[in-house]
Length: 619
Image (cartoon, rainbow, N blue to C red):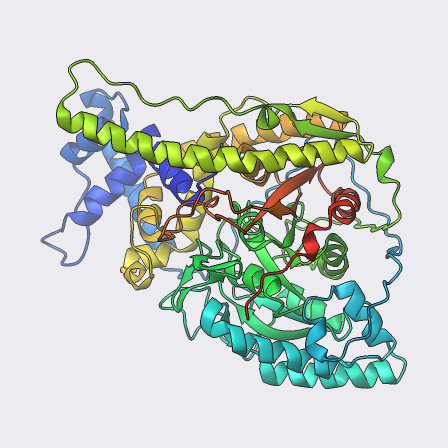
């Protein structure tokens, strides 16, 4: 299965509508009717409205039961209005905290000093721009030994951002003045022997859902272009403390959906006719284009995984609750995660080492240790793989003609089959890379243990995301300001938010109870193995975002000239359309808070393959 995330969200929203709409339908029907005695007020809920809602929701009610419900429903509806008067900002979280750990789970809390790899010796460079694609680890050693200055690196990256932004559209706002000040301070401290660590003087970029004082935080959305906050996000504060230099705020699809934002579409450096995917569109594009040393993105359902794959980056989606989200836009309080997008796995570990841990404000953040050890004996780890995902592709199975099919119906069926065949050929081609990864791991001496994801209705659980997102942006829907968002299609946020209003509280709770079962069953897999190898696109992406398990996304080769051609127009609906000479990825998964171990194994694979050393040619 290849995950089409936007259509998937839309279909999940529709599944929510079909379940039990009674509360939302009633509220909407009443809101649409007008009370003639009180201009502007919704009409009273009537027996007729209740009958319509019950019929649409499929809830069996007798006439007497309906009459008995009316008074209670009126009171319930009035409570909505009272709460709405509070005008709660996006930063106010619900009075509950999601915990992805199953009963009895134990996590490591004792912190140890990280053990970094020995710095590699860079060839002598004649031009500062020769370092554009150098790793954080390499740049850190040059800065520590004062062979290069932070100011020179910062100015180089700012120049590249200005040069390539007209083609790639990855910058919302440069933070140039702030960056130059930080870079000069870093150089002065390093010269004085006050070296803070591997991020000291390293230029980076933030997805523009992270608040930075003194600059707009637009969330990529029309209507929010001038929004600003008076305090930096926690991860920004922590990277400041590590001495990193913030050079830009990068694009995200509007309200963390896709790669289209109020300024256009962020582009894939490998093929600028395509979007970079999203929603961490700008961070992934800028890192891949050598326009920043690293970036921080976010993921709710694929927003680090997808653009890292499209742009050929290394992305770490940490365990839910490892990195505090204070100062970041909330989309789903129980699913949002912040994580690094870098060139290498160890770069991800370097960034993670500075941003993880409780901040006293994000109550979902747990006290756990990220003990990085570049010399970990990865051969001692038990490595599993999702067997069915690596099985040979089944032959294409076209939709068969129905009895008494008309000519028009046949035409539509043929068109659907043609589109399905095109998608099938793309998936089949990319599946070869998964097989190559399997063979490479075996050649490294890895004994791969077959495992399968537990059979649970994961797709039916995901409407909790839309329900939480609709609550986070309720004011947009209720005031009509959602029309300011760039995308207004069936699969986009405005429509999804409206649909989610029909998702009842009882069903939301039931879905979260099913999620508890998923957490328990998926966690059992990591009692059998330490790491699971999986295709990036597919069911695991939905599953592990729901269960809060960490994922590491690695470049896994380049499509050849024989790859299926991409569509002439990228509509943003499909993640696997790259075409010839574009990157593919593989994903490694681990148990909760086993992120350091996950990265250690990922680094071994990355060092054995070298795909992270490939870069797009933009000139």
